[in-house]
Image 1: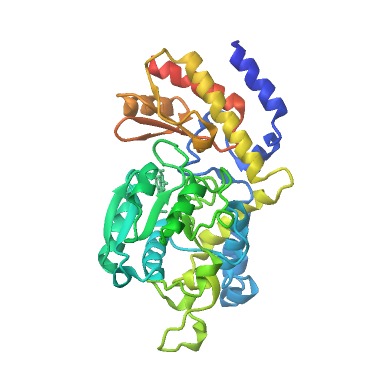
Image 2 (image 1 turned 45 degrees about the horizontal axis):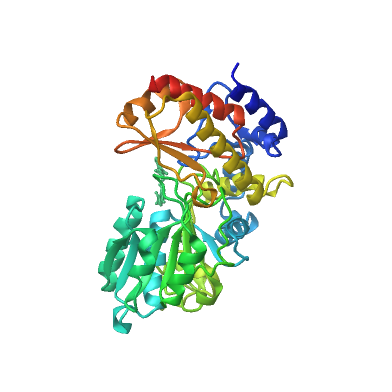
Length: 400
Ligand SMILES: Cc1ncc(COP(=O)(O)O)c(C=O)c1O
Ligand SMILES: Nc1c(O)cccc1C(=O)C[C@H](N)C(=O)O
């Protein structure tokens, strides 16, 4: 066996998070490197969903809105996500999809600075953004009388002006895996008098975010990737405490009303982050997510420990690819510097679609992002270094 095979065993023997894998439903046949698209199933979720369906819904029925805590689930689960993204409680609310929360945040951001009437008529959007953010930003701009400008995150500073209303950026680029400099970009946006909106889909649960510490204004993220909430699990919205009183949601549903059961015809926004809610929460998905998040209360699990292992896993994968894959066959797209790397590795080759198809058939599941990217996500809670070595060996075989 190769040196790298032996090294993987040694690294696994020292891995502080090795015991967490047992909290997930995984088979030992393949290697799952697609947790940045859909996280694996936490083992406690099926039992919880069964209880929610059979007892809370089946037996308690309508009483569960109060007795089982259904009504307050969006804020309660928001408070569980909050420390994972560096936020104090009362600033994160769970619900709706990421796309819907991008809409709330962007329109809310433009309204916070007064929009075109106040001379702020531009929304800057990450040029390489995940498509949904760009589509929603274009619509939010039309609705608010703003124009959208696509900018590379590295060029945001030069693009900021007294006309900038809001800036929508991805913390980690979904295709390249590049980690953007949230602290300094947020500071520059703030200094220009604009509002920052960060999409945390590919960073929450994988690395420290520090929303409060870095002065982020608004943020959104999904929960089905590194937070393992399940297919279509609800997303979340962060509204910095200082903005909450002025946050004017473009979707002021009855769940965000100060007195929802007052059934009043006039709208009055609730205090706090609750005003980010819209309609009736998706309880089955939301309570599955609540169970999935329990892994973060294990004493051996922390965002810092996850980040340290994530970097070790991606370093080791890059080392294995370098050793096993013939030189020049793939180009490494993900930055080598730790400060610029998320929890994935993207490799480029012209036949990436075919290669990924064969690799998945061989049991190593990553994904293909058009036109030419092989994408591998690393979830430190359930991946071992042996998985990584096996995946790189399989990849080298398929690359021929
Ligand atoms: C950066 C980013 N934003 C948004 C989304 C998707 O949003 P939604 O949860 O609305 O499907 C994804 C992935 O699906 C994503 O990677
Ligand atoms: N949300 C997804 C879905 O419903 C089906 C398939 C994939 C996804 C994804 O999350 C894709 C992912 N955001 C990406 O980074 O490409």
